[in-house]
Length: 353
Image 1 (cartoon, helix red, strand yellow):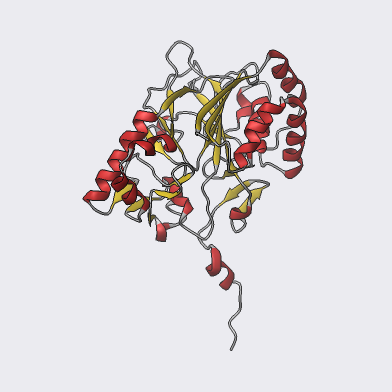
Image 2: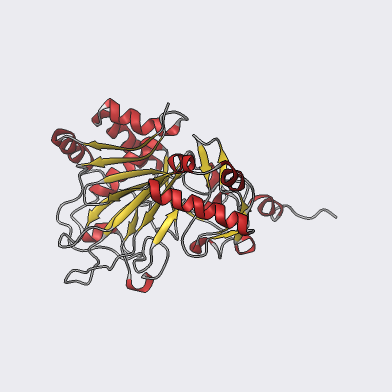
């Protein structure tokens, strides 16, 4: 069957009200304890229509895969009066934790929600532009274009396990309603690959590229801060993609690889679609074959000096097995360290005379 790119669904007023009734009083667990996750799963299965549940859960399988799912009219907290910094929790700036419960519940239908501690210190990450990070190529930056990329693409290669998320959820919490919302772009590589010639595809399928680790991970894996890899693996209709077009993340090994990468980048731009993450809009992005980007923007601030733009994010993985050797901050919030794999095992075995 032909691939679909983006599915857009709008919740009915009745469905929205039921979500508020069931999730408003649940105590948000910022570390993502198992009882909390199972409670959210149990609740959301009883509320959402079967067609929407099937659309979300089918992203675990190999068929009916979409690049993104946009869900409108999702409930968020009332009385939002600011936005958090990286170190602050969102509850300090709104009436409760409804939005945290909602985004986590939807994420739990697709996979296992989790967080990396230095990406966000609790299960739900708060993305707000910060002055000290304005030139960072992260969700906290603003003054640089965050060009098309697979989230944490190089983490597919640094160890025996794949540390990159299989998907991401974004939920709009607040915007400056006096200006045009910042654009997020989504690109389904299955469409882009149809625009490339066989020679470029052959180059992209070869290990002809060096890929840098994301900035926050380079200190952890300093000995492997750059990995050699292909951009594409798998079939053209179900590819696994490893690429990041921002800053100096990609280094082709020669001119031929450079041109193939440029042609791929152009095809991505030509087939991309714009999404504006506004309050009450929930977005799922398949991170295996879907690239996302964010345009450069100038932040605006309220009277307290808090940025208006506030988006919440949750990472999703098929299981938590890949993070078994990481330090657990509690529940599903993990702190990576460099002594992974067999070296970590050998360090605990005493020498035998």
